[in-house]
Length: 431
Image (cartoon, rainbow, N blue to C red; front, side, top):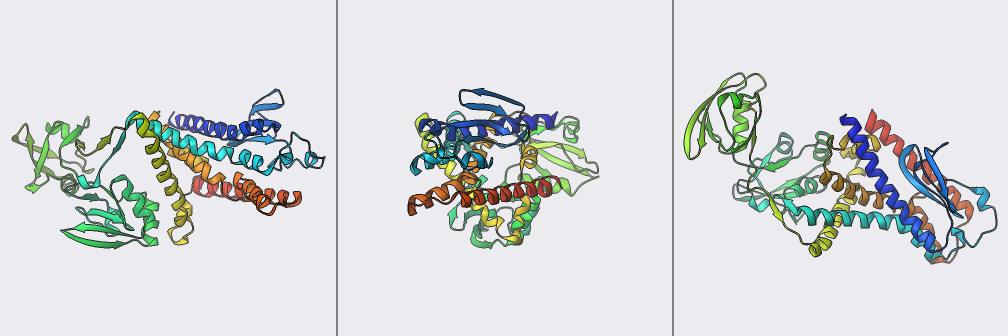
């Protein structure tokens, strides 16, 4: 059922993105009186699941969920309809329109992707506010996982900046560390510089390490059913101030003591309603107590009004897009092996939430919409950006590229794009 839920969410997301992207081409084409022969969600290789002709356009759903397309008359595209292109140009064809109109038609899909990402992020900020962990509120510094320690961080550090950019939100720390070269941290009252190597980044990508998290107190928020904590009588709201005489008022210290006493006994001092009580816990070989920490007071939520959400959503869209673009620095560095972390449809399905969560779904949709817009505008033949590249050449030189050049470019671009997609799907997602 979890897999079916993930697949259903993926198909819903890709359907929304593809339909709106293709409408970005369809609407200006109709505005400039260009004939649109087909409008398809998904690819109809050999056959379609559904199709119906309304007016001059055949609307349909293909069976291959790798995208979709609009077939615009008089345009060299993936259909490679040479028979039509061999005929004299007609006034309702794409090739007969002025270059500026063709440019608007070709950029329409990308523009819709960017606007959709902006609109969704603004809506989420308006309805839920902006929730984050401010780094200046971490009085005890950060907690560091094992990978974070390997690259030089220590529990209790305070992250000041990465590549000269102040880190104001903890969620941004991992992203900036992954993409940055050096960090300034505060440790024991002194500022220290940490350098990040390609080997560090390879390790972070391979392990999906979070590197740092909030260093919090050992106040219990959750006691799991059938757990050692429940057997010992621990309750929500208890603060474990010591274990076997060791100070555990910080969660990291408590975890260290629990881990060090598998198959052993823990003598706990617990602060409950301002009174100290003693509890004894006998751990098994898993070393799990069965409690979760309280994050009360850790998060900050900024309420954002309707008008404020518009520029706030734009800023978040720009940050998201810049993060996606900056990742290419990793992909082009073979030492990081970041190319192994690129994912196709199978990998995206794996990342979907197994249970429906509207906020997470729309957040992912906004991210993918911005990514789809960026990828499509790259100057690669067969993508929207390839058509834009040839149109800009025509506008600047006042000469159209020959039909033969466009056809060859389309074939090369299509083979490169499909080859890359096949490589990512087979080697990264499946094997």
